[in-house]
Image (cartoon, rainbow, N blue to C red):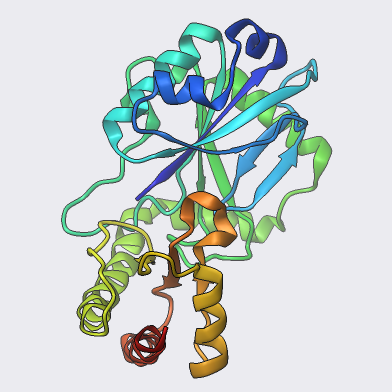
Length: 278
């Protein structure tokens, strides 16, 4: 599972670092810079991968620049933590549905990295792991002063979910491991059912170790938006083109393991027909 790290920093630090995306690529090997939002006070990539703007967490608003970094492997998180500690940068680690893992894999927390508690806040959502999409429930973990600041900002910005919904979420968390394990088993069953069918229909894919999504590579030169349109028009299958997530995801399309295996298999066979004609 590719967790997301959002690094926010003051423009004065950027100037001092002569900071560009290439600087991060230099200091954090094999990380891919996803996006820049130089006018945003803070940029956050949520569970649906849309970039939102929000106010800075803290008492003194100051323009910041932000970079989103795809965390491809656990050991590479040491780079961002060290960089943030060195330059007094706040790191927001978006780690939703981290319970949805397969084959013995355990999704890591940013706090497994020594020193991360000094610079990071980790966010989690109940949406996917506990089938509570739309309930708008989540939690954050971090140093007390940062969580206090986050609570203060949220208190001024909105009202929070209906209290009964919050109580239901709290009850879910008491049984989190047991509940999430059942959902993860369902997603694994669907993954195992669809991957061989994808391969049989011409798609080259390795089984993912986590999440309820499959990212499927397309042949070189085939645009994901063009394939998505053909799939919809020709065989009535809805997919999500990688280009919707930015240039870094071009050449892939995404499907969700949120329907029963027979329906996924039927959709895959239809997509194979599209692939055979492009």
